Length: 196
Image 1 (cartoon, helix red, strand yellow):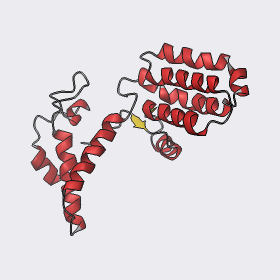
Image 2 (cartoon, one colour):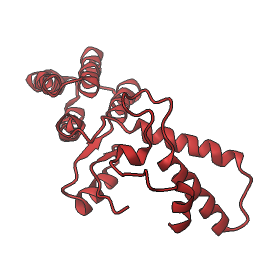
Image 3 (tube, one colour):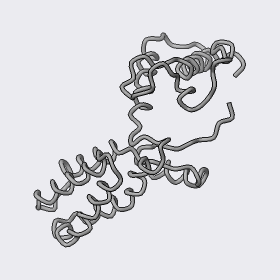
Image 4 (tube, helix red, strand yellow):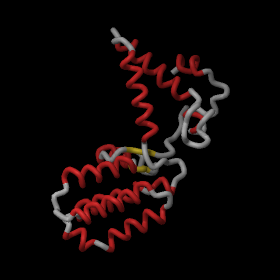
């Protein structure tokens, strides 16, 4: 298949980001906006001890706007709002969170600049969840080779399987490989999986 990456969507793990930047520096990297928002929600709910709940909730609200907005301009205006209120954030002991948001911001908005990227990695996580459910149903494998072949077959089936109930417009009737631009019309997925 020898396809190049069109983009990377990842959680907020700095180790993964560092490795991907070193190995694939020219590939656009989008941080998952869902994970960014959830991290801020957890911080405000469980770890914030600055005492100014108004600004903590305001910071969370603006982060939500950045993570869920539909345009680059809206995200930039939301960040600019927080930049204008640095003094309030300092008094509320939120400058560290603001610095984290400022560092992540270019990678939270990458999907506005590259149409190959989605704002979150929920599709991938759903695939992993479905694979986990299938693995739980299967009895234990006696040999590594058997497990490897079964997992490879599941993955190959997913790559060639056409979506039928996707909520994303244009995905139904196409497989993940077709969505990635691969012509699969001349390939039989079972025969192809035996070669790989």
